[in-house]
Amino acid sequence: MISIDVSVRSAPYKIYLGENILPQLAQELKKIHPSSALIVTNTTVGPLYGEKVRKICNKGVRTEYLELPDGEAFKNWDSVFMVLTKLAEMGADRKSVVVALGGGVVGDLAGFAASIYMRGIKFIQVPTTLLAQVDSSVGGKTGMNMAAGKNMIGSFHQPSAVIADSSVLKTLPAREVSAGIGEIIKHGMLADADYFADLEANMESLVALDSGKTAEIVAGSCKIKSAVVAEDEKEAGRRACLNLGHTFGHAIEKLTGYGTWLHGEAVGCGLILAANLSQKLGNLTKEDVERVRKLLERANLPVRIEGLSVDEAIRAMKGDKKSTGGVIHFVLLNKLGESYVSEVPEELVREVLVEGGYV
Ligand code: NAD
Ligand code: MG
Image (cartoon, rainbow, N blue to C red):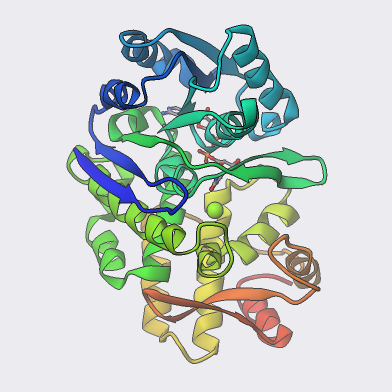
């Protein structure tokens, strides 16, 4: 088993990674010594792993169980309130713990509910998608959507531990695996050229979720994200680099209609646009951009999108939550493995979009 320390100042914790490591959950519960536990999962993950996790928890602590409906559409107040109601009904107190078993949606919802129940109780993440293991379970952001926008409501609430078991990924649809790899490639590009090269050497193993390699690669990604987060827990500066590819990606999701492309797929396409923009600014070579494109292709991620409107994309990017005052800030690369944030002349962005198939 691999373990990583996430050294956030508010509440440092460990991420555990490996094959068949769910039993580690029992050890973590023992350390917390909770008065009761609530497993929060959904109707897809629950039937696959709910019983197993329940047995592990039940050994040491009275455990209740809740299945939420599956899907981003349910990442809303109704679901959060279901969790809070269940906690109240089971008599959960300030020493109780929430165990989030699922992808990023379950993790964000359960974490948010834990952060506001009795002004905040502990929670443990058991992420079951590749995206959740490398991204959403690291960093302490929790939240839910509103009609007005994604993740409009939320809190920073660090988990007490994360148990990232690679063996549960085996039931994940291939498209979801690729979407997770989008964020993994992003991590290499923005912070670690050696990790990027590792991905080039092992992409087929990762796509196939090979037992020998997956946990190691996931651990590499967690290390990169947790180092960034430890430096900037509440997103005052450095953390913005994690949005590499996301300004473009969010516009793709918006213009194609949310849910048409998975987030990680849109980010994958955004990574190539961000790489092209960095090349136009004289930072990356043509060969660098080709390396990125090849790696995305080997992860079965889309690298081009035809026919979206340049004007609408620009408008969407100006309206993005991460833009301020209509000025678009992009995460750019100095070189592979080194990122910075800067404004970019709109003309250059337009050029990149047109070359990327936009009209
Ligand atoms: P998801 O949680 O919707 O999971 C994708 C699908 O896979 C769902 O249908 C789910 O039920 C299913 N699934 C999960 N685990 C499975 C398994 N082991 N086997 C079979 N099916 C399984 O999506 P996601 O990509 O994990 O997460 C996306 C969410 O994460 C978004 O809401 C996003 O806003 C959030 N997010 C949060 C952060 C953060 O820092 N908090 C970061 C990135 C993303
Ligand atoms: Mg993302």
